[in-house]
Length: 366
Image 1 (cartoon, rainbow, N blue to C red):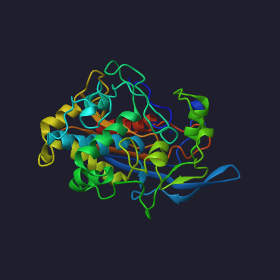
Image 2: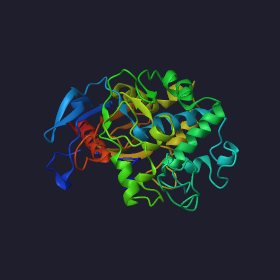
Image 3: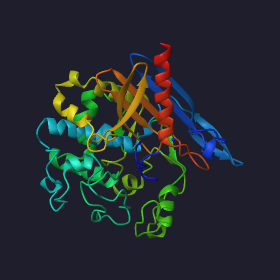
Image 4: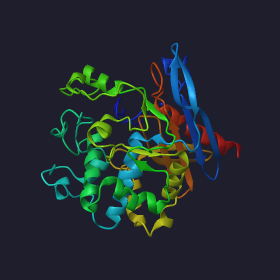
């Protein structure tokens, strides 16, 4: 079982309004799988909603062309994949300390530590209030503590090594070579996007309650909160308010077809040896000290008839996820705007598990 993730910026998933625990179904959901044993796409609900007399009313349907705020899916589609390329080109050493690439950065923490979420950094910190990163919260290398800050630093390493702004590096290293024509940082201007959140209430609540992270600030310490629907902007506060929508931990937008294309490319990574060294990709996909965590990627067990396969991927707090099975030409994509509800939203992990179960059922009936 995976340890819990950050309750705000980080990860999250569906149910009906009367479901167990009171979780509310997302306004819109897309689930898709492309595998040798099952292939399907389900697209339901609305990408934009409004409230009339306390009731949620859809005003624009969810479609396969809808852009979605990927939130922490950015950590793999962007940052981890860029590092696969840079490690393959011997421009980044996984076991080098961060100070090798970022002067005055942490000397006791390596690139590998951050990819494994074992750097000991705080899980979250409001950089729009205090831009200076705090000292580590835990001893580096001792245990897994999922951290947005670690991937913010990994994004900075990519920018430093390439000499490019992160969005330009992504285009050069990932989206253009893989044909991801609908994957972009900082919001798809002029395109149809799913509403990401109602406003900035999640982070305001985190600050005012001190839960789950007891940072020494409150919502009154920041004056730039969004009080209306977040549409075409990244929901994550650090990415939007402090980092211009471009960061190693969040900020990416994409469509379900592009997520499937990405998943299929990683599933067939040996065919892309013109982009990376296959042995480097294999190292990134291998579990570290924590069996559910590889370098950047999460690992999930998928029970199929007569075998268990490993799905690698990552969820995002706004309601998206991507996954693939190495060597099996299998890709999975989830997109939803689960935060666009009044009350408790479904967790992204619940939606993701529904998709994997549906795929497993398809394998039994094919």
